[in-house]
Length: 225
Image (cartoon, rainbow, N blue to C red; front, side, top):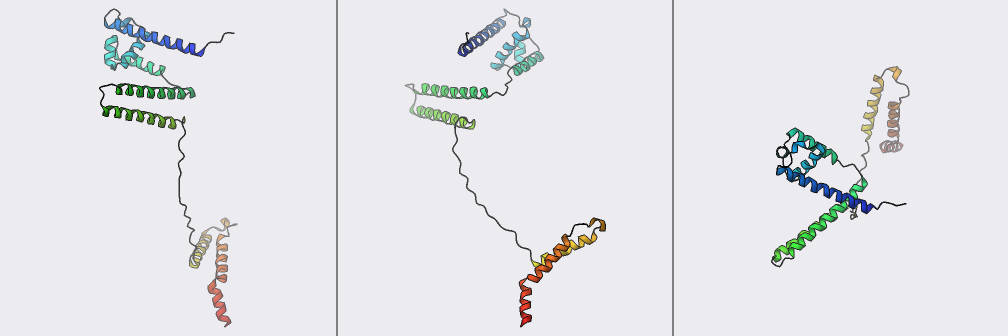
């Protein structure tokens, strides 16, 4: 059983895309020299030309003039091209973009160093070129870290925790709260007062607190004398 080589498939695809690009460029040249009437082109033949002219920086009106079409037709072609270029979320796409990022960074560094090696290149330009190369490498490393392809240094966070307990209520504040609860209970209808003994319990708590307060003990001690 013969299995298809993935590398061979990729090479065939690249060759096909290159041939299509050359055909589109040749077709555009024929249109410009007048040997082909662009009005006779089908939409699938015209759209690659629209994409090529867009890459040249041509506006919608300029593309319409070259291809002898209306602005509306060119806008529809642009919309179709955007739909064709829609990217779906794919984990493989991340790896592909990272690979392209690293390759482009390496290519930029190589070009800078190639120009910096010239005999007539001033020393200041060579130094600046090396500085630019380092900046490209540094930015690429940071981008790989942000994408999760390189580890980032752990950051140490120090913080102080302060706990302040709430101030205790005074005896007078407890008395006022108990009175407030009693007034609320008195204002309620009798049928709604079932198991809500909060005011009574609060009053009992105040009484118990008063009985056990240091002031009460001191008064008792004074009476014993």
